[in-house]
Amino acid sequence: MKKLYVSFHSFDNAWYNAVVSKLRKTNINHCGIIVELSNKQWVLYNVGPYHKLKYMDGARYLERYPPTSVFYMGTTDIPLGILEGFIQDQYKIIPWKLIFWQLLGRFIFPQWIPKSCAAFVSNYLQKAGHSLATHVAPDDLLKELKDADNYAERKGKSWKDFLGTADC
Image 1 (tube, rainbow, N blue to C red):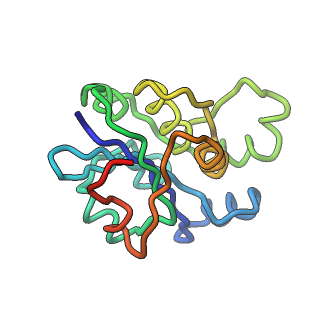
Image 2: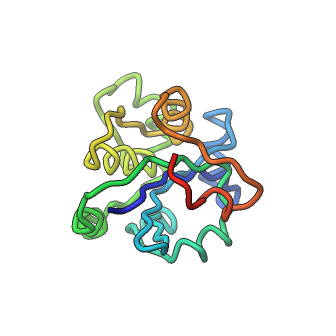
């Protein structure tokens, strides 16, 4: 069994993060998956636009990019091959598509879901058996998780507190 977490971040290190934050009127502009195997965390994340997803040691990533919020999603038997499939799928995020979606696309083409960190997390959680909508914006995913009764938001002063050992 693998423990599954969703982390939310507030980045201001690139122009597209600032644009998304302004358009969405929130500081939450990124999210990712954390998988814990045998007390070792692995983060699946995007290094930036036009790059594919990568694995990284969870402790190093979370120390460098502390999350603003972490949700414990429970345990899963989903094989790591599905994660590998996402990586091999060239899941690249293109900022101008996200900005277009935010300004016009979601109204003109409501069925179109551009690749985003929130869409990746939503799709992964759906494959892991969670009944969530597919979101493009991380703050929408965060709102759904906060409104649901069966997911536990972790509290703490550092990322180490977020990834506690007790199950919720």
